[in-house]
Length: 150
Image 1 (cartoon, helix red, strand yellow):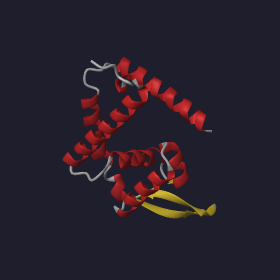
Image 2: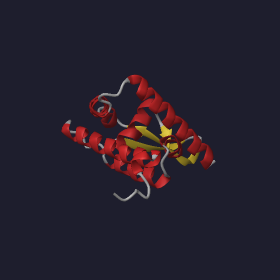
Image 3: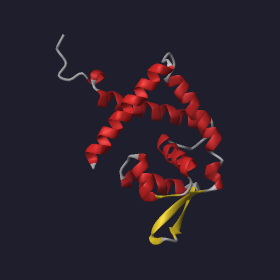
Image 4: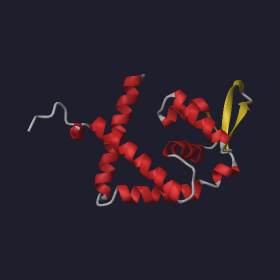
């Protein structure tokens, strides 16, 4: 058998990337099963709104950890679906404040159920201590990458 040039199954980057994509696909499947037209990306942004309230596009881009064009595209789709509205910031009319609508708030509990189902499936057989270690390591990696980007 030929030796592997590079083993992706032993690479943190590859494993987190592919696992993230698989989690997103699973979440989308569970959202659809509950009758929700909601992607993992959209849910991630909605969750930020539910946790923080009104927010500027710059703030949500920063805390979501993705590029401006990705967030902009997702927000436009969410606006088309009637989930967010944009208002001028009274302190700085060049900025817009994003707010959730009642339609988006109505998604909160049912979408959380899809997340819980997805995570229960994904974390099957993994004890909470292992999960805590994984979250700690991922948090450190995220901090290192944020520090390197500054």
